Image 1: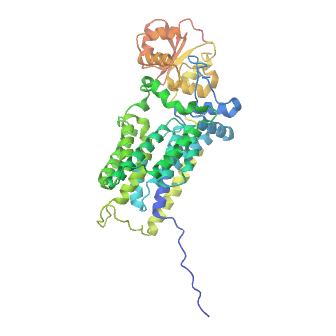
Image 2 (image 1 turned 90 degrees about the vertical axis):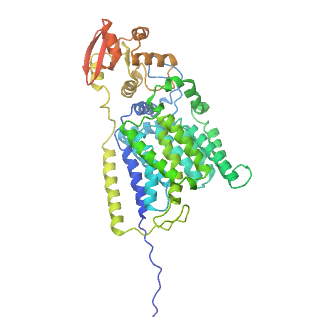
Length: 492
């Protein structure tokens, strides 16, 4: 009787590198598994609830009295629709879970772009790419923009079918106004590839591969005009240009100062990324150099571009780490040895850590919802009890409070302003800037808009000016917020 020969059983145990990738993906999931508190997201939630209730996508402002009926292009109608549908299914916790999954997927894909085939190198490259932007990841449609960018780069880097870019671009354009960054990225890699061809001793010629993908992206932009709002979504960048002076007052359009905790966290990984790029500069092609320089510059000009920097640098950092000298002294660009089979104890420890992280973050997500503790809830409750939120009164409040009032009251909010800087007429934005800075004409602004209630940060100049005028008096103060009413205003 002959002995049967069987092939050795192949281990289905994931590699240590795969576990590290999963760990960083769960880190992204954990970032999203937090109660929703971002003021912009509160407004997006309310609009999504309105859409899901069958009222359609707003074409004009329904929330304010200063711009009521003004044309409003709802740039993020697609994410807002998903918020409304999920809220209808199971409340705000489902929306929070969606954001957690979205951030987890973005983190996973970014680390996949930085993958090197070696656990430690992938961990370094992936952590550097994630650390560049995750401090500024917020639960709002911006994350759909991050997803659009990372999927675009993934299709190009993995040499997938270019036509995948058409639905990806459609989703990106209909979710967030950051899609012009895709145009800039394609421009950088096409020009870089042309320089690489010339550097190799060839003649100037157009890079076929890069142009195929750029062409598919261009087709996606054209197709993106087919949406409920039409081609208006493609002109968002023009709106930004027309209201440049207003956008300069928004924090995320400022250059990063790296002094906050988020800024310091980001600075550490920016330095790490730059060190890795400088060490591996000899292995970099112009196709990598131009996007790296371009997106580092954009990120230093505007804080909102920092999360996109991590996406743009992820594949470049992966290539730099693959070309880095090995521990055995192999030169730059030498072939990397296959990753050894992980030790059983380390493998088990990482797997157990991942399970614990999953349980922790999932439980956290399921116990969340909306966190409104940063807003003047007590002051708003006082106003509501005494009839100051009724249609008989006009109030003025800071833009972040306006977003909360819209979230709370919907079309009955009748706010002075919120953070939709692209929608409000320039005159309203200028009046708000005067109120916020406490300029000398604030009383005239209040009179012109027939305001009889002020809900404001008690430490800002407007409160001092209103009280000193003798025309206003305080009726409620708590937690740093105050409510002032014009003399003669009756409280119910």
